[in-house]
Image (tube, rainbow, N blue to C red; front, side, top):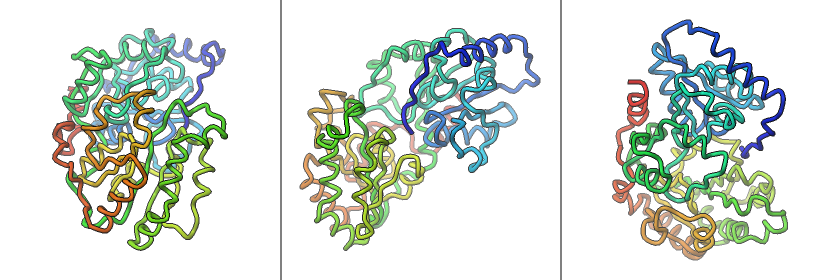
Amino acid sequence: MELKKKERFENISTFLKVVFAFGLSKLIRKKSDRKIVLVGGNLGEKYEDNASVFHRYLVENYQKELDIHWMYDPSTTYVRKLNIPNAVKLGTLKNYLLFFRADHTIHGHSLSFDIAPSIDKYIFFNRKTIMTHISHGIEGFKKILIQEEDIPLLSRCNYFNCVSEYEKGIKLKEWGIPEEKLLVTGMARFDNYEYNSPASRVENVLIMFTWREWLFDLSEEDFLSSDYFKKTVEVLSDNHLLALFENRQVKVKVVLHPFMKKFEQYFTKMQTPATNIKFYSFDEISIGNEMKEADMLLTDYSSIAWDFLYMNKPIIFFTFDQKEYLNMRGSYIDLDKDLFGYKADTTEEVKKYMDLILIDGHSTNPYFKEGTRFLDYFDQRSCERLASQLFK
């Protein structure tokens, strides 16, 4: 999945579809009392994360009350494979018509990427639809970057769900979202996990690093000389760790960030039959399934760390570029005091904590009790709470 580049909205076909759909929506009467609900996430390219979990909950529990639709990228095939009902292709006339007729929209990333392409210029033409941002992760590690096109979308959005009062505080104070728009319901995808469910022995390691937007437009030569690439290669090719994974029969999956697509070849060529490390593109696997199956996480600042905290699984935070990261992006949490896992600034420290986990058998997260500082609900009822708030 890569962030889609918008075409100029003056594109005549898009313009005509939007205008025609808007006019047609005024003429068509509803055939039933069911509310029309549109759900989308991951730019329509994957059925993944909170949006998909909440969509599945609505399909299973609200079919009588709601007319539910999933928005998807027409270049993908997952809708047919997963047999997702009432799926609608993004960018079609039907998509825009449903947008203007909808009672509710629920998106995980951005309304203009998940629900109706390039709709940001026309957002205020739709004044009746209740719009909810369900979020694709918990805020904390990255300060939000508000682009010019995001401002009208954030302003028009009716509700933002929050995993806890902690996250609500970030969206209230840092984002400037009015309190009446903030719904504290928990995170939808937590409903798929068993709370406090560590493995008795760590046998499956998930490695996933987040992206740095300042690397996005680098040439290949500059990317290969970046600390991000060099430190990632250093830890993944370390002889001690490779031997440790082999001797302990540990399977290691490295999931490459979707924005790393053009540089994937430089990572995947490190994969050999002789190692226990396998590399995967974000498009190839289900992150939700991988998090459930993994017994521990090695990351830098990825928000999936919260999922591992919830399940009481060990986390190593590899903070090799913390100073640069804070200068370029910033964090809402104190990366020196508030990390809920082992903090490793160097590869040597990563090795030390891997030994602790894999050799000494520390298969739980020693910071597990810190979870109550950041999370409010541990009952697998987050979807139920959000649906109750929206459709009561």
